[in-house]
Image 1 (spheres, one colour):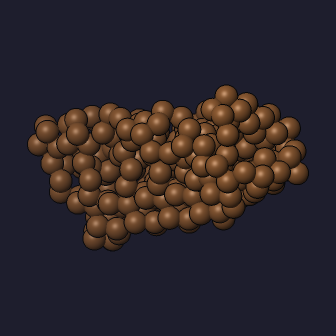
Image 2 (image 1 turned 180 degrees about the horizontal axis):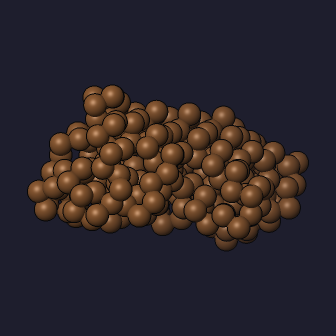
Length: 256
């Protein structure tokens, strides 16, 4: 087949996927084996394209015909999973996982990671309760499906640190439950999770904060770790004039 004809067929495939024309997609893929090879050689991410337009039937058909569910390595395009996460589409995320997508597949040199992307989407959905809860469920589902809880962003900040700094203790608890390292320290100031949680509550400690303190200590977070200022978490609360001191002593003597 001529190269120009192949290019025209690729354009047709894009159009058929967009419109969800399953029969025409089948005909195009089955009519000529060389055509499918050409599509794959051109690294057309058909699965991501189908996800973009919410074409689940087309996605399943394309995947069954050999199009990679995680896209192609060394490309700058985002994967189908990232597209579904950014759309806050839990049903499509589940479909992709069912089809075998890699929940740890990062793109653009590890700058876009599914679990971190899901957390950022959650942070941006506070104005809408339904979207807010859906984003939380996507985060939980990714962990249940094998997403690593020990990922970090481009600033070398681990996700456990981000959740602690943001005061998102439900997410921090989820990460710990799924195996996040509890004694990791920040690249700057060398603070551990107890330092970060205490920093969040110097002004006004809450019941949820004391609960996460207990959890961190139970998980083995080092209560005597010293940061770059040579201060332990307890010393930090004293230094800042916080009112966590009694609570910290309570947790230390009752749970350590």
